[in-house]
Length: 293
Ligand SMILES: Cc1ncc(COP(=O)(O)O)c(N)n1
Image (cartoon, rainbow, N blue to C red):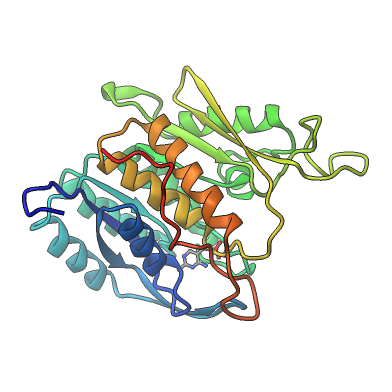
């Protein structure tokens, strides 16, 4: 890379993960996708492939001063939020983000870890919707998170579309001329060969994962083969970080999401064991099918 090549700059605002996941995993994704990653840590987690053993939220001034250090100096092209832990953190992050102009914000509404450990206080969901969603370019809940956010069950493809529509409404619709996109990720609700959610009646094998993207007008749907592996720790973090990388490179949301899905599909299908629990994805693989700017 020559010194005149523009390197997009990106930011992750998330919890740390001693086991090499979370915000450090985002930095791995950023590096593999050739963007310069910065990070603001919201909470220290003691964590490994077996679960989250401990969470230490950082004091609010420690979070806002990290954010200011990055945003007053480094021109961030795109950012993401991951684990924000509680309402006070969400409010402080939003207040600080509002002081600076971050052109693209991907909100991964992290609530519960793969291990089942709680990463967002119950009373913080409304702060997330009221303060953070209006700042987002894309929100990326999985099915259980979407259910919490929209308040109705998501058990079918039609429910996923309804949830994407409701989420788009929660983001403030398409006001102020800004395109906003809701992405409902179906990894927790794989579909059988007939397109029915597995477990919704009858014995059927998971074949495909559907993700639904909606901008208030158009549905864009992504279908990827279902991969049976226990190494799914960090799937959502990796996807949202890869979307950030694409947006920072100047791609529009559907293209950034499509490339991120391609990257994720390969990262899931080439995982390797790390600990004795749910291992991480393979962030080392070269994204040969992801277009460079
Ligand atoms: C700090 C932090 N942020 C996010 C996740 C969610 O990732 P996963 O659902 O793979 O456990 C996590 N476990 N820890």
